[in-house]
Length: 599
Image (cartoon, rainbow, N blue to C red; front, side, top):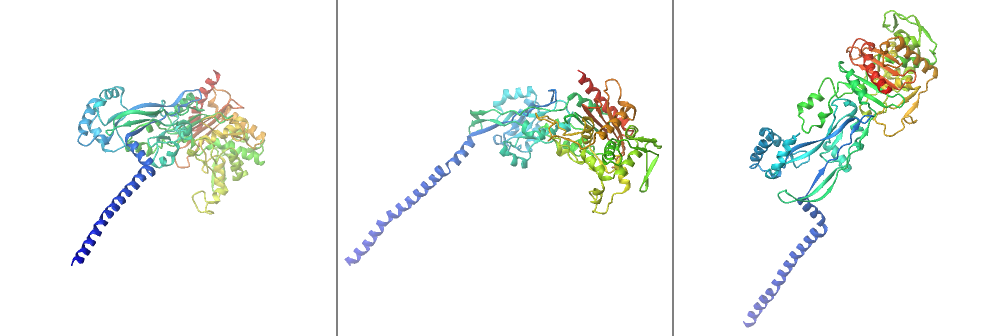
């Protein structure tokens, strides 16, 4: 009995000895887990959690850079930046219960509509993700009133924005372009280059072409804030770096007179260019738009639709869009005839009332012809039947070759070339390939096509800028230049930017002779007058192949024979003739240019 009791006591004694060990093991296990976790948090993840903590107490306030100015060739401002003040709400600091009181106080203090403030708040946070724009373009007195009461307006703030400003409104809008906020997709690509979600980027024109030159670099302040979001101290300041100014080749005076000359036309363009270098002196297009529209902080969908869905297409640059050139194309046909050897410079041809090609009799514009004449008089009188014979005689490939040498059918090289059409110079190969819309082999080149191509109709579509570049070849002695809107300190007569056209001196001399006769005693006689130097040029009246009224053209250069300026004037769907509508437009620009040249 005694042994049994002793045995049971022994077992009980042994179990009690094991329990402290188990408890100690559990304690050590938990301590080890805690130590491991602390090691993980402090050593391996310490930097990450410190960053999160800093983000809670440190706020980075970015400072946008001031965009570089756009200046004309004489330093006159075409685009700059202006400061504008806006009212913002930080929603995390204003709950639903406190908003009505804050809204009413802001409405009374700043003379704003409480209903508008509610509507703005209802749109949610801005693209920066932490605040809501309540009002823009605050007046100085509104800003002053707010700052006097700012301590009692928790959750509201007035901040400054830097917006692009175009002091001349719509002037040169297609050349200058505009800026817009970057999109979410653009931000993903541009963030690594220093762009912010609130950034604006050059969208079109020079603003886009020279974005990296103009934009500058962001700066900012590092502020320490408490749990209520109140600033405790300034931890650092890095000023933004302003963008660089850009001097353009545009001449403000010439641009202004060019746009005034277009004012009474339904549409059109004027291009003025230095034929020696390709420097664009004026690039006007009508209809146009005010680039300040895109600088607005808040724009309604209705306002956007009124611009982008406008049937007049004000965003389309007529200077770089293709149209039927009419008789301004005839020097190209003349070049093809002489360079082919089939119609040398001394050629004379009989002109007549009309010539039949295919099933159509193609008339001369006077209904009678001009007798037996050569190239110079054919240009002077703008004889259709003369150039029908030359064009049909050399064929479409020879005409296409001459056109290509003069820069037609391709991009001009201007910096804003993504907005430029290459146009069309149709030939038999193009027709055999389907003319861009049909199956190959179903739309053969026919005699009527060749006759039309000879005088710049139907199968020929060119831009005013291309025509200015081509006439620069005749003005400068045979060089194809690269049009440009900013010199950039480059040599624009270097071989990479200016090439010699493979054209016989006799061909150039004969075309120049004809262009001079047009102005001295031909269809361009109206260009003459006080303040106009000796000039060469060519008028043009073109049927609109899309079915609208006729276009009016005039291309000219001066002084003759070695030109210093080329001007192309185009009046879209303005029937009546190039000498009636387009020539006076070019003359106004020529007068201002010559007056400035004489100073």
